[in-house]
Length: 386
Ligand SMILES: Cc1ncc(COP(=O)(O)O)c(C=O)c1O
Image (cartoon, rainbow, N blue to C red; front, side, top):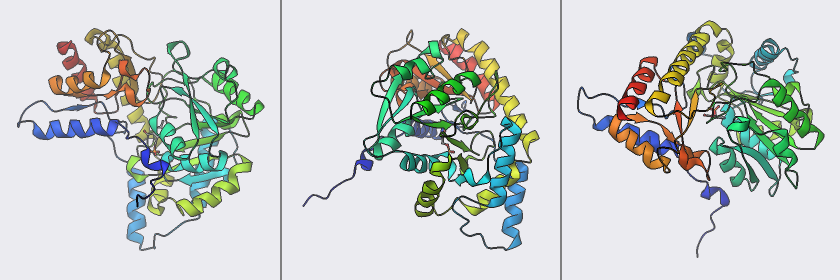
């Protein structure tokens, strides 16, 4: 008799992983001395955790104290540091009871979605979007509602777009700076969206994982504008701690206990060692700002050099470490285009189809968090390839 397979089993792959595998294969097959593959497909800092975080983890290991489960919402001392960070960056007081330490932002999504939505609910987001939003919602039986956004709103949702939605969605996910476009909702725009959501009974989920990597304008947190919003954040990007799998949520009062119960059941706690390291990362801003300065230099260089290499139509690049290029004048098949670019000049980038299922065929995403010299060389190779 055929066994049942659940809807979660039909979650599509995250295509960038296939591009990473293709780039690895090509690199492995190169003869000695051949120019290396330049990795502009990966969305993670090439740097490791800051030295202070590593030292704190080493000290914890050497101390012999057992590393065990922590409270589901994390170490109190870490939550206090997160609250202090929120005060420092946004001038906002948040009670530590509302802060939940999670297994990366990724671990925060199912907690937030399960606590806030039911199967059959509808959750809106602008396209292009970070693919796991749609894939996790779908696996949970929640219906994604896609708002096609373009350069006129810097690929971000607007209140006007939300007002046109009939029926109103149950939730909205925003990301600023966002992946893949690298664009932002400026503070007044985020405020307007957050207030509209609150007034209209739409639960806002604000992905703030790229805060700290903003080059043109200040960032604001949705928690400053709405008492009902859920904020998702992480140590993976600005804090350069991707592999430590640690992040946090700022929760509205009504979701604190539901998320705590879910977290106890789903994860028990985030890794203890990562919590210790993350706490120390808050003392490492000088080192982390050097990373930001490097991203900014790479971004500035690519914004100057890529147009001359045939990528003239770039997103505004306000934050994160991504450039979203409209390649309609060169190809209508971004998967084939990226494969050819990798094969012919050894530059790996991510086709837009991962991020936008209807228009992604004419976009690709360059990530510029790799070594600065690689970013300079990539632009040269692409110019010669044009
Ligand atoms: C917009 C966005 N949100 C969430 C994540 C997941 O981050 P984490 O490593 O904290 O799980 C990513 C990872 O690239 C991302 O780009």
